[in-house]
Amino acid sequence: MKIEIAEIMGEQSKEIIELLQNLGVSRTEAISIACLACGKEITSHDIEKASGMRQPEVSVAMRPLRERGWIEERNEKKNSDKGRPVKYYKLIVPLREIIETFEAEIQQKNKEMEETLRHLKDLKNI
Image (cartoon, rainbow, N blue to C red; front, side, top):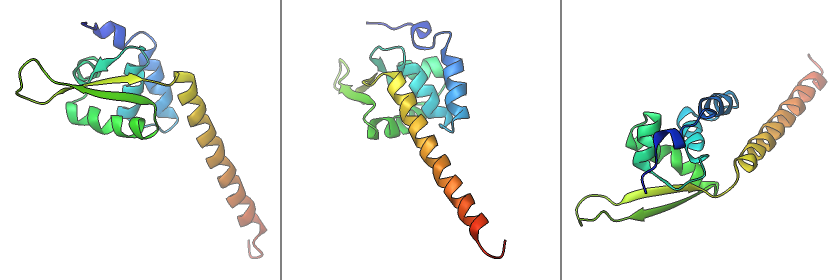
């Protein structure tokens, strides 16, 4: 099944990428999340074509997504036995859940920073 680039990188993709980056998500990770938000299983090559990233960048960006349990990854051999297998990726958690995870992480970080500021203010010599 051939997937069109427009299906991967829709109208909202650029905004999703920009907003994720504003939250501190790396550029390549934000692009990968936006590509996978199409809801379809797509290949590494599809992501490369849609985003302009190179294959190594896609692989590196997928690592944290895989570690968080957000994507499913599978390999499929090409028709010939030569060459590397084709990697397929699919987002297995809703985008909303990913956003809520980032929200919780940011809230935790802010709480820790506020506690550090309070502690600094409480020091006698300041």
